[in-house]
Amino acid sequence: GQVESAQGTKVVVDATITDAPDLDILLVPGGIGTREQVRNETVLDWLRNQAETVEWLTSVCTGSGLLAKAGVLDGYKATSNKFSFDWVTKQGPDVDWVYEARWVEDRNRMTSSGVSAGMDMSLALLDRLYGEETADMVAKFTEYSCSKDPGIDPFAAYFRKK
Image (cartoon, rainbow, N blue to C red):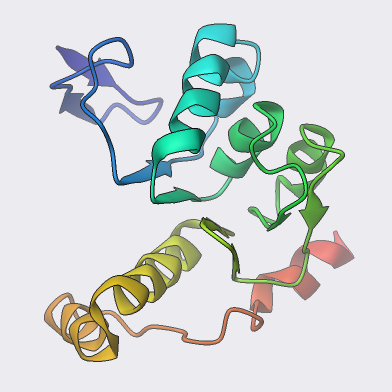
């Protein structure tokens, strides 16, 4: 059915966590809703189960907080949105949090900072799966100027000052 975001955007959901098909890649989005979902054991259990079978487990923004709360980032390097970094890191004390990173890849986990960093991470994943030429083509067709260096995060210094 139809689901409305906090901003009012509506999307149609084809499957729920109870009837989702097997996944190769799981992308966990962030946003204000993550604050509530870290207390949702049904969602956390589903994330734990998915983490065992997916080829790639990824997140954008505070989605890494959900993954951390589920325990599926324990022992992994990860990052998140810098504005919410303190909240996110409290969700997973056994995660090796990397503050100054646009995105982090650790084995089959990829986590990104904010929204545009999520685009960069997604293009890095496309590069991993289909090669640099394909990733570059997607960036060009979407007219997106990609940052290919995961360690360059101009927002880390900005939010550290706040």
